[in-house]
Image 1 (cartoon, rainbow, N blue to C red):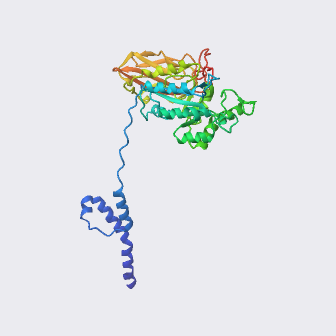
Image 2: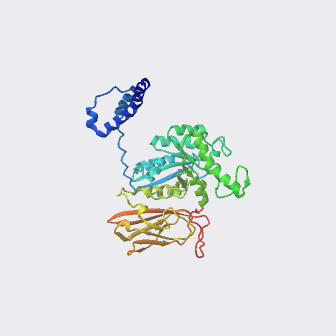
Image 3: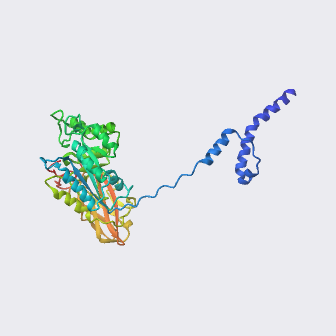
Amino acid sequence: MLLRFALIPCLLALSLPTCKKSAVSNGSANGANASASASPAKSDTSAGSTTASAQSVAPLPPPPAKPAIDQNAEVVIFGYHRFVNQVRRPDTEITPQDFEKQMQELKNKNIPVIPLQDLLAWKRGEKAIPPRAAVITFDDGWKSQHDVAWPIMQKYGYPLTLFIYTEGIRPGHFSGGESMTWEMLAEMRDAGVDIQAHSATHQDLRRPYDKVAKKKLNPQEYEQWLNNELIGSKQMIEQKLGVKCNCFAVPYGFYNGHVKEVAMKAGYEAMFTVYGQPITYRTPNDSLGRYLIEANKPKVFEDAVAAVANVAAGPAVAEVSNSTLSTSPANGETIRNAMPLIRANISSFGQIDPNSLQMRISGVGLVKPSYDPKTETVSYQATQKLSGPVTVIIGATVGGKKTESTFSFKVEDGGGAPGPATSAPPSASPAPTKK
């Protein structure tokens, strides 16, 4: 009997946690009234601290509104090399006086100079830019860029991007007394100058030849060398200067589909050439053309300025998501046929003006498609081989407003095509005369 009475307090003690948990559950189930009527019990310190902390945290601010992107804006990019008082190589040199006159002309014509990174942010849809603008870039890493041209840029308050090849920076293999040092680059970086890649040794990246080792390369050696030119130079800039290197300027403008593919896989967001063109919202990032300024060709600067002088702000282009389109090849598909029939059902556009219909293909440009109003299908048979990633832009006027949609596909390397297709791949670039 005594043992039975002794066990009762133990059993009651063991049942208390269960009862407490049940009481809490019931209180929650009974809602706010039950909570309000319950007598406040002493709570432990940690629980009170947690409640006070939760009450003191401010609510998150609403997400910022997306900027209004003017998709009709246009940008010209200028490229410069050396700044000398006596021009001996007019293809890469210009006098400081002529350079300052050009910077003054941009100011006189109210053409703002914007950072290169703002251009890329605009193309990503993240930042608004003026309806017309210019970007200034310097190539190679010449000392006169630091000593002569940079002070002029600072005078006008213009941002600047440097494209440097790493073996041309002192004490690199191809540097000398006219080259910048890494310390000079660090000084410019600290002042806000954007520093990007221009390869390691400044060679024709299509040729399997190592200028440092002075030897012809077999296929395996060429791939290793090309990776060092594109990836090794990027890594060196990032490590030595502590910057993000997301842009690559092609030496001399020489490139092909393979060079382009390796560059984009290396992590570059954009690749720049020497074929001057106004940059639009839809210009592919893997072939952004720059106007290279030469002492013996002043018209190049004049043409670039004229290209944006009359650009006016206009309504943004209405975007139609590619998820609402039925296309062939499908968006994101990889195909082997290098000369495909490209088709898209554009019923999601609405009532289009058939006369306004346009199709653009990266590496080809504007093409003339066919349109079937009954099925609302636009189609185009490729007449030259496509290669690598291919972007298709379809545009038309709907209710007086330009409407566009974009989809992409990829052609496998060595993809075949029906018929005697002999055209060179569109990714192969025409040979420039210099740079």
